[in-house]
Amino acid sequence: MKTINRRSKVYRLTLLAMLIAVQVVLGLVNIPQPAGLSITFNMIPVAIAAIAMGVSGGVIVGGAFGLISFLQCFGILGYSAMGAALVNVSPVLMFVQRFCSRALVGLIVALIYRALTKRGVKSQISCTITGFAAAFFNTLFFMSLLVLLFGRTEYIQNMMAGRGVITFIVASTGVNAVVEMAVAALVTGAVGVALKKARLI
Image 1 (cartoon, rainbow, N blue to C red):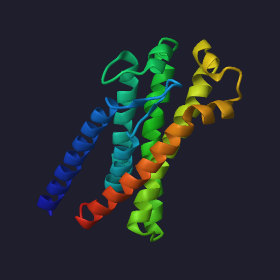
Image 2 (image 1 turned 90 degrees about the vertical axis):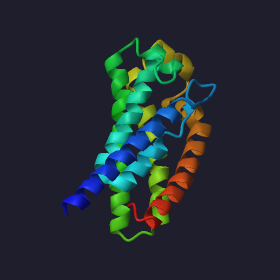
Image 3 (image 1 turned 135 degrees about the horizontal axis):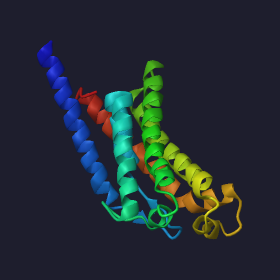
Image 4 (image 1 turned 30 degrees about the horizontal axis):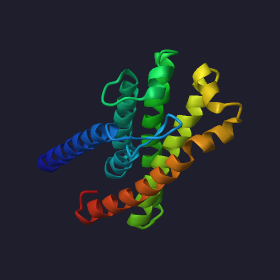
């Protein structure tokens, strides 16, 4: 029994290390967009962690994504022009917007996957939905907190250009969100099934 538990711990730690390493790499290959945002696939490792390791895995890898995103405001592990501008307004609020939102997504998608498996949903479908949900909630929380915490700043007001909040969010994330959700759903679904067939989850 102790040997099995040790192997399980080693597996979890190894998988966590690999997914966080993937986060670092993905943080360096974001696809910039004109609105100052970028297309990112960092939610895929979060979804996979949530599937493979539950709430703890989702929160840890989600938090790692959030920390990398926060560090990019200072030009570490990549660069975020928007983050660099807004971190000067309030580093604390920027930490909440970047880190806390991503850790929360990890928690939510782990609970979604758990609920789907308890209902007997097929593995590929539940993994695909989890991947889609990770990208969806990432966009929802990121943009909602951006407007809530920094909406009155000159930087965001200039970006909004007199548009309403909903119009601004849709216009800023339209292409990004669609691409991220589609890719996250497809990749997470495929990886989840592969892990299941290999009896790793």
